[in-house]
Image (cartoon, rainbow, N blue to C red):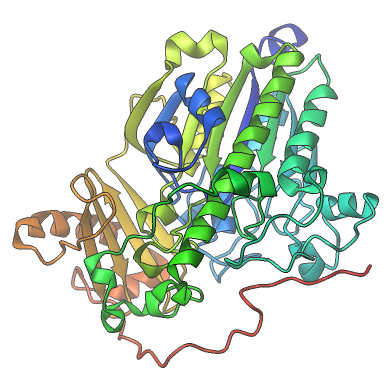
Length: 494
C-alpha cells in the first residue's frame, strides 16, 4: 500500500528515447567521429549495455515493446506504421506509464509517442506530441509541436526547408528556439519544474532526431565541417545485387546507396552526427534542470533508441532489417545516488538485452511490482537470456527473422529460403557471411533450431518436417516510381 510518507522516498525516473540512433554511436564506446559528451558522462555514472537490441526494427512496434515490456507476439505489431499488419491488436493496457501512475507517480511524456490513435496517452497523465507531421495526413489534426510553431508565427512551416523523411540535408531553416530538439527538451524541463513536489515523477523525453529530416542547426553542422568522417562499409555478401535476398532488393531507399556520391555520403553522416550532438547537449539542459530543482541525485536516468540506421552500410539506408546498425541500440541506465552501490557505475555489461527489459528494470529499481504481462527481464537480474528472437513483417515477401546468441547472429529471409550467419566477435561489421563455412555448420544448425522454435502463426508454413523450406523466391522486376520523394511533406495552410 502506497502512503504519502513512503511514496516521497521513491526515486524519480527520466527515460530518454531517440530515433534512428545506432547502438555504437557514442564517443565513450569508441565511435571515431560522433561527439556525445553528455551521454559519455551518463555512462561514466551508470551502466552501458553493449548488446542491446530492438527485436522489431521499426518505429511503432519498437515503441510498443518499450512501453509494454512485451515482444511482438504479445503486443501484436510485427512491423508497419499506424496499426501495423494483420496480427495487430489494440494497444496493451499494462504500460510503463500506467504502472508508475498506479503506484502514485505522476507521468508526463514529451515528443514522439507513435501510438494509434495518436492522442491515446497510454497511461500518462499528459503528453505533448511531436509526430513529425504525421497527424495532419493521418487524422487531420495538429500535434503539439505544430501548434507551438503556429504560436511562434510560423504555422505549417515545419517542412518548409524542403527536407523530410529522406536523406536530403540542409541546416534548419527556422530559429534555434523552434527546432524540435530544443522544444522537446524545453517542454520536458517545464514539466519537471511544474511537477507536484509531493509525489515522485516519471518523465519520458522522446526526441525525433536523428531520424531524418537531416536538418541540424548550422552551428552543429559546422562542428563537423572539417572532420574526416567514416564512410559506409560493405560486406562481401552485399556487393552482388542479383544475389541479394528479395527483401533487400525491394526496399525503398534501400540498396546501392541510392547512388549517393562520396561527397553526399560524407555530408549525410556529418548532418546525422550533428543531430546526435545537438540532442546530447539538450539532454544536458534537462539534467541541469533536475539539479536546480534539487532532485538530480534522486533521479534514475535511462537512455535508449527505438532502433538504429544503417546510413549506407552494405548499401542500405534507414532500418527495417537485422544488421547491426539497424537493430542494435544504445542502452544506458544511470542509477540515483541511493542505488549506486547496488547497480554500479562506469561499467559496461555485455548481456543480451532488449527494449522489453526497460520496463521491468525501471520498475524494480523503484520497488514497484512488475505486471504479470511483462515478458522482459530486469537488466540487473542474475537471470540472463541465451538468445534473442527478432521478427519483422508478416505475410509479406519482405519478412525477415533473426536469432542473436553468444558471438553469433543468424538472419533468415523466408523468400528464397536464405540464411546468413555472422560471427560478431570476429566480424562486428558483418562483412563476411559464414553460413556456408563447414566449421560453422553446428552453430548454424543450433541457431536454426532456435529460430524454428520461435516461429508462430503463418510463419509455420516456412517449416516442413522440422526443416526450414521458406517460400518460393520472387523475381525482382526493378524499382517502381517513387513520386513522393521519400515521404516528403509539404506546407500546411490551416
